[in-house]
Image 1: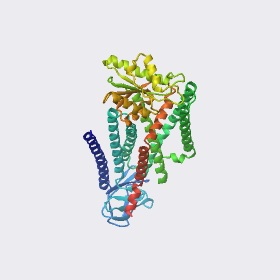
Image 2: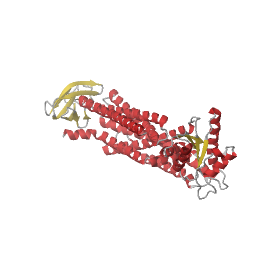
Image 3: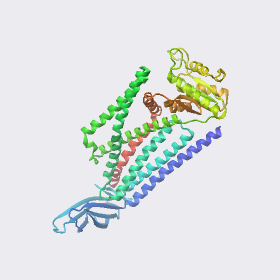
Image 4: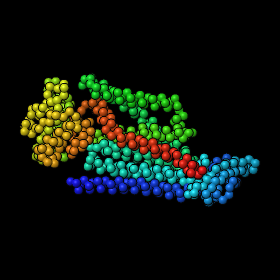
Length: 501
């Protein structure tokens, strides 16, 4: 066992090293490409006269040299390269072909860094388009790593928060890679129309647009959540858990309304190009954070639905039935009865398929308002359905889902080593129950009983909040990383300007 564990750790280390090597390779490629391309720079100057007559002068000669001046429609393309380290002021004068006294003059403050990269005040730095390519490659590589990890976990270790996170990050990085690839393509197709600051504004604007498009869907989802919870309370009775969905729906609706009101009161925040870097960075961070959590919600819903539709293999030794509220008469309420019936259906199906007879572990202790333990209630129901008592091993001590799994595992291990274990619960609860099974050291599969339409939205949101709370540290780290990348990407020209001084 120790050798196997050491082998797994070694493999994980190798994969981590390979992933880090990939990121380092992309960063080095981007840096080298910028250092190479940054030695040359092309400026597109407005040419109001449509004139080919252009002169260029330098305050300090020998710092940069012109490599070409050519008119392209309403613009004059002015290209130059760095010769040696230093600073100079470039003055480009475009003369009217009809009157030489009528002219347009543009002044550029240029610096050639020790690395040879050209920096221009107002036009940023040479090779800035390569930064977009590097961002696109980083996002695409991150998408590939996360999606590959998701595919592997889906087959080997599906019941894990990291499965949700991997799929959410796959979607998030996929969107980002498409966005940065599109921006890089825009720079190649329309170089005269875009500058670095405009492109950064556009990147933040796109993320904001994605978020704004989702606002109506959030409002509709909040309305549906409220309707389903009202139906739940009317049909199942008032409980604190049944109020949870209404509170979430109110929060979602108020959040969507607040975003809409903010957009109406401050239309300047929605313009394509913001004037101040602080506003642009803040918009990028907030929009990216909202989009990330939307991807996380989508991923959690997908994993929950996938787990509910999955059909395990018919080779199970034990079927653990997770308990829930028992009726005052000691009989199972509809929710609990659904779990038992689902376990019975699988039991009979397995007998038909291969003749293997599974044993039952009804799991659940006695609550303060319950006449009998949940396990005893389920045992009685199983016997009423024709299951022999010798096939039933009640677990009557647990009070939580994690304890369900831990105590049931002890019973199964006491009967058979390395037994195949299946748990039965309600369909919306399969994924999170599987996570508790993994924490208890139980390698188990899950099946779920169907539930009423009005119960699913409330339960789905509870499961999602539970997932966020259980792994809040990972989410916090990723949000901080998003903030850091957004600020760093915006500050690259400022950093180069500081180096130029």
